Length: 391
Ligand SMILES: *Cc1c(COP(=O)(O)O)cnc(C)c1O
Image 1 (cartoon, helix red, strand yellow):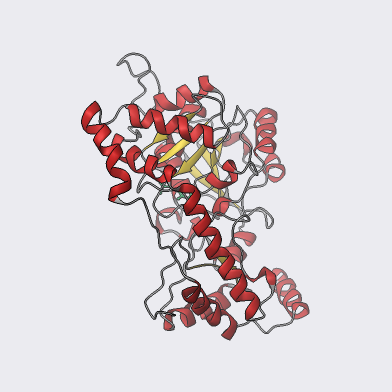
Image 2: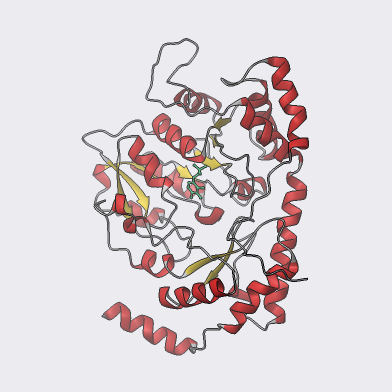
């Protein structure tokens, strides 16, 4: 039966108290609560195995943002007067810029590629500000797989460190559609809204163990083997309690992914029943399991649909807002012209998704899409786009 309850853009389900309890009892026994305790070490091992990584190349962190901050500090260091800028895509979650600012960089916002929805290494190679850029932070947008090897080459050619915000990309790494490179650190998020969650948490993947040790040090006050702080750092450590949740999440992850896959399949089936074009929805494996994306012609059309969904008690979300440059705190950030970001940001709606979402609820969402089709012919659409580029 279709319910009339409000459907939210993200309806996470994390491990139950019963699933976490055995790990909590281990904490009672070991009486280690943080600082690379046994549960964090076990999580790092199991997660490395899951992602086919060498030993000691995965560092747990207190959040995705903490992981990204530590990776920037370990790889690029703090901003310098010669290179004060961090090159960020304008289309991303705000945490990308937050992390750069924590390391002393001024985010410089560049436009994204229409294909990858993030920075393009060839474009960035020719960027006029290159001599002022201390770190480049490409984003795996919505967990889409990224060509890490191309960024590794960019880094080798320009000597500018690259740190990848792979917050939502755990599945791309687990399935091998995205492969890490030993000289480029990746930061992942285990936030409740991601496909793998423990409430708040994250990790750094850096497939060279010596460099991963630097990242670990950056999450722990710059301490290595002693209590002498030897490098730029933060407190970004994961606690044993969060590791307990993450281990329980790992135990149930195959089942969770299967449930996500069923929900994505139900979306596709409902869209087909309503006669919507096959490309109406973007779902796993094109994006992370936690997202169902529906791109409208433009921001105005997206807003009309958002209002129609809202009237049907369904909430849709622009996951990355209207672009970084539209956040009050980043209004003055230096930036390029951002035509592709402008095209994408307002038009890309996140529809309700969750591993517990039933077919009836999904049919409710798709019925509203079907009732609000975009009628404009593709030829007209091309013409409108050309005119708006000229104007
Ligand atoms: C979720 C996310 C983050 C932040 O991760 P937290 O764990 O919430 O700190 C950063 N960047 C992107 C692209 C994200 O999707």
